[in-house]
Length: 256
Ligand SMILES: NC(=O)c1ccc[n+]([C@@H]2O[C@H](COP(=O)([O-])OP(=O)(O)OC[C@H]3O[C@@H](n4cnc5c(N)ncnc54)[C@H](O)[C@@H]3O)[C@@H](O)[C@H]2O)c1
Image 1 (tube, helix red, strand yellow):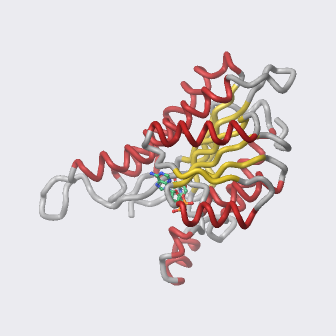
Image 2 (tube, rainbow, N blue to C red):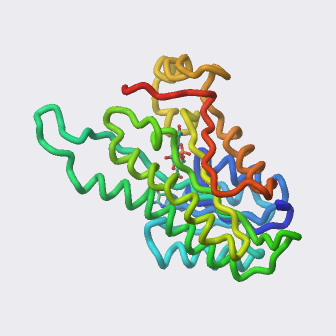
C-alpha cells in the first residue's frame, strides 16, 4: 500500500514509538493525525512537524473521544493507516510478598488502557477505513497495526497485568484480520523488546546498559526509528496480514 497521501492515525503519537511513527509516516507523505491524551506534547509535536500533521486529544479508552479523533483524521484525508501505540506499564505480582493479593483496580486499569483502548482504536479506525474506496488490485483499503510487547510471550515476574494486556493484543490479531478481510483491511501486531523511549529514559545509564547487554544482536536498545521502519514495511507489504512480529534483537526475557 502506498503511504504517500494516505490518511494515518497514530494513538500514543505524542511520545516514543508513536512519535517516531508519526515522523516517519509524515516524511513519507502521509497525512497524519496524532492522537494522545497528552495535549501539550501532542500539539507541540504537530506544530513542529507541520506538513498537515494534526493533533486530536483523546483518551483511547473513551468511545466518544476516539470517535471524534477518527472523524477528525478522516476529514483531512481518506483514512488508510491506524497505528495503535498508546499504552502503559504496571508492576505487581499475583500475590505480594506478604501474601496479599494483587489489587483488581490496577489490573483492570492496565487491561482497559492497553487492550480495550487498542480495540477501541482498531474498531473505530476499521469502520472509517471500510467506508473508503479500495486502492489496489487486491481490493485493499488499509491496514491496522497494534503494539503488543515481548511480555505477551515472556512476561517477567511482576508483569502479570501488562503481559495479560499485551497477550490480548496478540490474540486479537488473527481474528481481527479475518473479520476485516471482506473489507480489505489488514491487521498486524508489533511486539517490541526493550526500546529506548522516554519510558526507558527514566532509568539511569547503568540500568539501560544492563538491559542492552542481554540483547543478542544488535547489542543495543531498540530505537524508536526501528519500530517506525517496521510500521513502514508493514504498510507497504500487501501480503503481510494476521501476524505478530517480534522486534527485539533476538531477546528472550528471563523470569526477572
Ligand atoms: N519502550 C519499550 O521498551 C516498549 C516495549 C514493548 C512495548 N512497548 C509498548 O509500546 C507502546 C508505546 O510505548 P513507548 O515506550 O513509546 O511509551 P511512551 O510513554 O513514550 O508513549 C506512550 C504514549 O501513549 C500515551 N497514552 C498513554 N495512555 C493513554 C491513553 N489512555 N489515551 C491516549 N494516550 C495515552 C502517552 O501520553 C504517551 O504519549 C506502549 O503500548 C508500550 O506498552 C514499549
